[in-house]
Structures are given as structure tokens and as C-alpha cells.
Length: 276
Image (cartoon, rainbow, N blue to C red; front, side, top):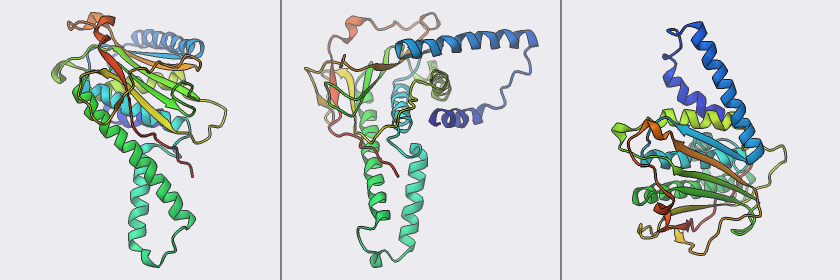
């Protein structure tokens, strides 16, 4: 699973922490609390289709962009729109491209199945990378409290709908904020426990559309404003809600009125699924 791989990669850099200095009583108490918390995470995901991730401190705007990017990659893989994780796919494509360059490409006949598959994979990667790059630009121009991932169907009635809600996150500078790696570790561990993205039903390849809520005057050029857009209500909205524990920071928490001048912006291109 994508979340398992992300957890292992992030944790590899933190193996030295351990719990050797803790007493067995403290360790058991923490384990019990962890199990209770996990059960609540599972219940919320099953009953409400919602996963709450509460960070014990402030985060950066760049960190928020990273959260969205990694969740987007995760959703595409978990919902069978990518045959392998994003990083694995990039590595595989580079390896295949190098192999093709070593061969006599001129002698190859166009239209071979391998070539078609390679081109489709390249197209999907290019679409995803373009969206990820433009998200970085948008996050540099505006606070982004909500992101929607609409899969299949239409804007008014998608087949699947995922929301990344960051309204309750408290932002601060890098020197005052949590490390992005620690936040990602907590985020994907919670997603792993909640199992929000798994489904026993097979999913066919469908396009994914990204919409972001940003300030109407942020000056973004690539995303297109959708002033009349309303979040679909006739399809189950699976929500990943990120927040900050209010008592851990001095920075004020955003209020509902802070989002009055925010409108939805739509990515002008969809990410088309690819399967081998």
C-alpha cells in the first residue's frame, strides 16, 4: 500500500528515537491510548467517511502544499488510477527510457504495444506533474483551506469525491513549525489505520479533476475560477480534515468569515488514469 511505503520511508530516518528510556508502565499506558485513538479513527472513517488528523503544533504553507501533493498521489494509486506508486512509476519510466535509448529506436515500428503503453504512462505522469507544479504556484499566492479531488462523472455529479480540509490548520514560519516529515508520518499512519481509500470493488480508469479554494484576488493564472461551483451533495464526500491543537500555538485560528473572499479554482486539465 502507498501509505505503508510512505510510512516506512519517513520512519527510516527516525529509527534511533526508540522507547528505551520509558518504563514498561508508561509504554503500556501509551499503547492503550494509541489503541483507543485508532478505534476512534476507524469509527469516524466508517460512520462519517471522515479522517481527522490533529497536528500538535503549527505548520508551514509549503507543508500544506506537500500534504495535498502526497494525498493526491496516494488517492490516485489507492483508487487504481496508477499501476504503482508515483515514485515507482517515475523510476520505471526513466529506466525504460534509458533502455530505449540504448536500442536502435529508428528501426522500431511505431504502434507497438510497448510504445503505446509507454506513451500513455508518460502522458499521465506529465499531467500529474503539471498539476503538482501549479499547486506549488497557487500555494505561494494564497492560503488554501480546501482542496477537492473529483474522480469520474462530472463536476456536479462525480463518481467519487475526496476533500482535503485545512481550514483548522494554524500556519507559522518554518522555524516555529513542525517538520513536514513528522506531519506526513502522522498523516499517513492515520490514513493507514482509517483505511479510508480502500474499496473491494474494482475501479475502472477515470479522469481526476482538482479544485482548490483560494482567495479570489490571488492572481493565479493557470487555475480557472469557478464562481458558481457548489460542492456536490449527491455523492459521498470522503474528508481528510487536517487541524492544529489550538492550545499548542499562539497564532490565531482562522474563522469562517476569513474565507468569505475565497472562490473555487479548477485545474484546466484532468489527470487521466493509466493501467498496465
